[in-house]
Image (cartoon, rainbow, N blue to C red; front, side, top):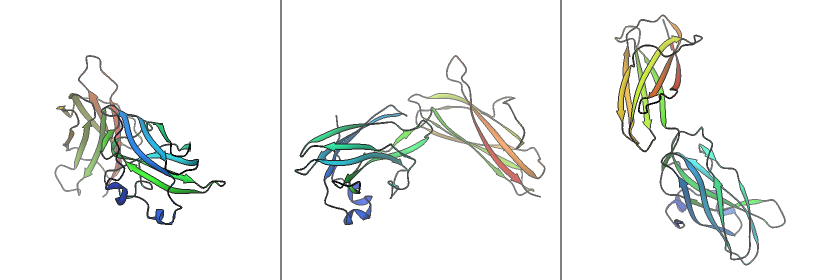
Length: 249
């Protein structure tokens, strides 16, 4: 069930350079595996081996970072809580770490990180890391964003409103998109016909731009966008996004 990746190219490409100054390696990451659905990371399982002839202590965690990030231990979207380890000489320990916070929304690469602990002190040092080796989606049923591109005051149309949607589900979906432009302080509700409707396949990014031809006075405005899932028989609450923008004289 576990997929051993130790010794891959990742070991040389993204390990912290400070490891050259660390004490000799005491613990080694042998394998990493994940339990996940098409859009939810549930469990990360890591196998750690004590490669010495003495008991060793360590600290283990994992991170989710953007694909290709050269320093994931420092720049990441999520770092799991750390797990303390005590492993007998020459033995292995399989550790399960829980999934990330539900607020994540994106495509990530996962890597596990391991620090050894100097015996008799709390001093930590880099011992090993291991990359899962495949990027995957973690997010809600739909990733949804709205952007506004004001013109220069003489352009036609005055505004462009762009919807960006990714279907994170395992099946295609029918969606409806709607927006309203209002003053920043104004509370608005969805009204009127959909700006766009579409059928989007599983895992597909859908981007569409609407032309807003209403002339607006200079000042701060906001675009409020709604995404409706039209696939089921029972309507679900729409996703809502806001984008504040400014029109100058």
